[in-house]
Structures are given as structure tokens and as C-alpha cells.
Image (cartoon, rainbow, N blue to C red; front, top):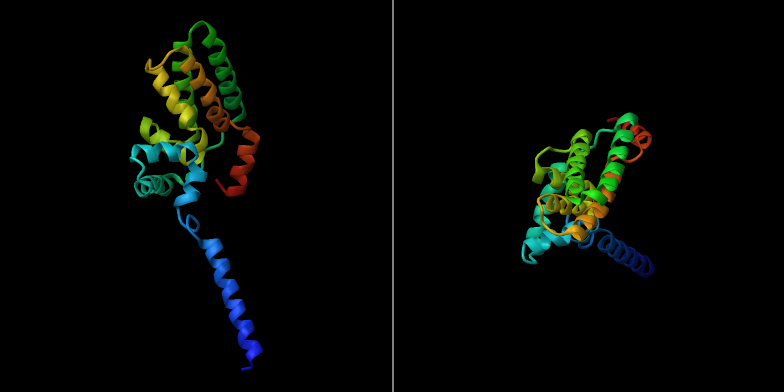
Length: 188
């Protein structure tokens, strides 16, 4: 082999190795690190804090959630159920002015009912874990509504909880035509 050919081969191997490090480096190609932070958003930080900053333990817990619920595909909502839920949520927001505690309790029940109808588990902790896999950045609103429904916090905390939970509600009742189209495309 000529010297030029050997140099070209070495350069190609070095470039390929560098590309592999960039593409498969830390947090990529596995359910850990940065990919879990991106997927779960604030939920990652909550789990990390619960594990006293032990990122390995937090990543194991979140990785287990992904294994359990990652392949789950929510059932689409029929158009009439979508419209009904949207009207009920509007009622929750209107009711808040006169009775914040009742509105928060209704928001809690409504979020849980929509989640169950979409196919998420029914148990409180299991439901939130499954929702966190698919709606990690907004699931804390549901958690806050649950706390407020138990009477934790004042009126401002209840208002913030309902406002924050609205993002999860909107994700759960997303346009039923898009859900049906997605279901047809994915064979669900």
C-alpha cells in the first residue's frame, strides 16, 4: 500500500470514530442522561430531588417508566367526547371564581377521567407515572391539582394549579381528527 492510501484510511477511521462519539455519546442511544431530561422536563428534576440528587437512581426510575409505558398508544377520543370534555373544562374555569375548592376537585376528576378514557391506568400514582412518560413537561400541573384538591395551599396555589394543569388537559383532548388520523397511520 502506498503512504497516501494509508494516510487516507487513517483519516477516514478517525472521522468515523469522531462521528460515532458525537452520535452515540453520553445520553444518546440509551434511556439516560440528556435524553431523559428532555423527555421528562421538570419531572426529571422532581425525581432527581426525590433521590437526593442521585442521577443514577433517578435515571433508573425514569428508565423503568419508559420501559413500562413507552410503547403505550392512547386511544383517540370521539369528537362528541372531545367537545364534552372541552365544555366541562370551561365550566371548571368558570366555577373557580365562586368556588375554587370545588373547581380544583372537578379539575382533578376531569383530568383523571380523560386520562382513563384515553387508556391510561386508573390508579393515582400509576396514572401520573404513565402520563409523565408521554407528557413529562406538563404532568406536574396534574400533581399540583391533586394536592390542591386535598386542600393543600390557598386560593392562589389552586389558581396556579388549574392554570398549569390546563396544558395537560389540552394535550389529552387534542384535536380528535388528528388523533384518529394518527391512530390510522400507526395501526392502532
